[in-house]
Length: 191
Image (tube, rainbow, N blue to C red; front, side, top):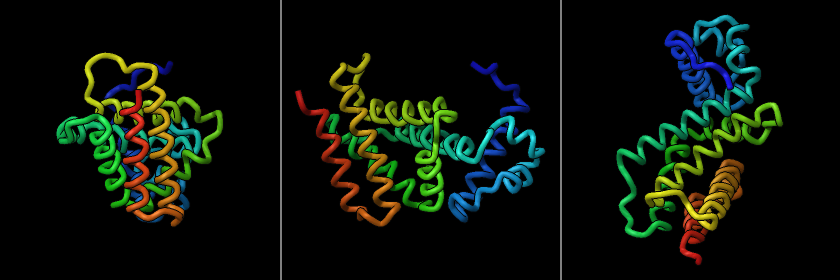
């Protein structure tokens, strides 16, 4: 495990992520060029590569930051439904709508996840854990999840990712994505 970042290093990392996010939101995956990210973040190219060895590493980290932002929004404004399944569906629909507002950014992050190989495994695991935590937060239960809930969360997470890919590629409408999310969330109601 890497040592914690100093305040200067953390600020430098935030600048890098903000710059990559801006570039991706303007032009998608191909617009995120490491040299441009370094220039925009005012860091040396070698410094950028020390933080993020590749564009895939960088964009997966951007996705993790986006998910953490969504988690904060859900914590500040929790879903209003009474039962867990509708709460999860509402939360994931909100997350999808947040990504929908920046389709080029969403496309860049999803492409990076799709291109990720074993060298990005730890970062992809963090994205998966953050997505799973977003779902668990929406469930709103106290205490650790049961094994069946953990299994349902994994399937819901996979469905959310697949629905996002299908929407980005033009193979699913927003209504279909919403329906798929609601269907997957109903797994939480199964015994």
